[in-house]
Length: 575
View 1: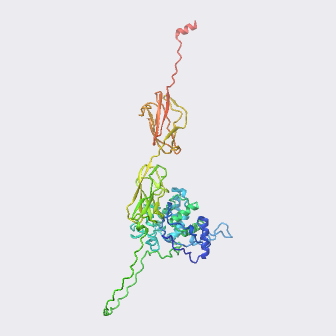
View 2: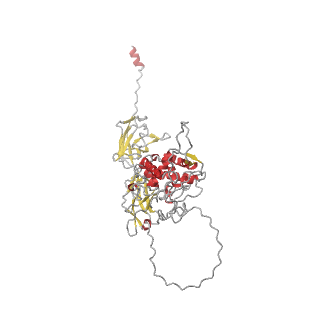
View 3: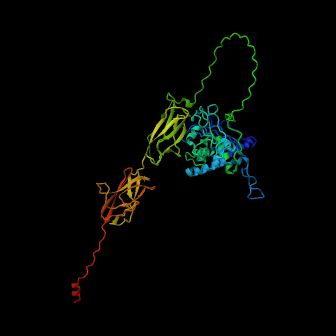
């Protein structure tokens, strides 16, 4: 879909040229990789593409639905102090700077949660406020209940391909009430197919409701942060905003409000916010949510006397038949094919080196571009796509190929599936098998060469410490077993010799351990029983690394008492 259909500036607030220059200036300061001409228009080279290179920008939270184009006023939201006072503002702020209390609270709570769960994203709540302003006028001026749910539905236009994207129903009307086509829903304007995986429960009521500002704001935050984009960097913020709605005019409008809100905002009562006037489609796309009052039917007139039937006309030559509508790319897809994906295997905690590549084809095998492919991680696994999400939607490129984001293995080992499906069509899914293997080590070595010795009945002065590596790199979090064995040829557990203690103080001669972040494995303190000798402690890890450590227990020293002189010896000595 074309990202938008012309931008109209806010009526009566500022001169058109001044407003355009303000957008250009903000775009330059916030996103230097977006350029503008002297009239504030984006250059053609900087217009984002609807195709996708694997970054996810080809997708859109809103389906690139219309948005409000009103710009913030040029005066500061919090005016400078007056001459008479150096501390007291001259006014409480402009009307546009006011954000309804519940809506503002939702934005700030979402920022706090993202700071905990994805600190590298550096998401400012003002960005959520800017998007909320552009998408719904802050939930229609804060027209929400105390728990944050919109009092009346906020629905975008029907995405039926007439002036907008053609997105067939994906939720059976559950969110948008339309079982034929999708519509953007709620204060942050998520389309149902995106909400299905991006939805969050921001107010802890057990539901993920796109019509609730707490849920929608948190979902928007996670959506913006899903590819580890850093909002403190220009490129990260630009990519995130464009992924929400793929339009440079949308980007500039959001950045304008972001800059405005950063200069200051204030809380206002719910329901008293300013609702924008202008939309990128001139407001013609929305279907009213409330039916109009039907007019009173007029009194039927007295039927007139029927005329004498005339002779039938001679049939005219049939005209040109009505042309059949051109099918959308999605409607032409016959099946999905693997586009050369290699074996998907990774060690626990590592990134998969291979990425899934899927091609959309017609029944005749021709590639289909601009089709939305959804990739879903399925199975008992904690593996995710980069950014921590289990679902990603990518648009096929000119060759019909969608490249899924990189997979990141979790700590659960075993197999799982990544399922590729075509959004808007009921076609057979294409499954990719992936495997997470256990962390492994191929080499173990002691970190000290000191001999490990102890006197029978005593405690070893030094603890056993070894370092694990795999192909020369640190092998962290690798499972290991340390066992006191009977001999080099008999690896069963010895019932005599050195031991460690369990929590109750009982002797233990087999230990299950794990290397730390530096690949180090430090055994508990070891004790010796009364049996002297040389013992072997064998350490093995997942992956086959083995090390045998020698432990020596010496017999306890015994002192020989000095004999007491006998009486005869004493008498002889005395005489």
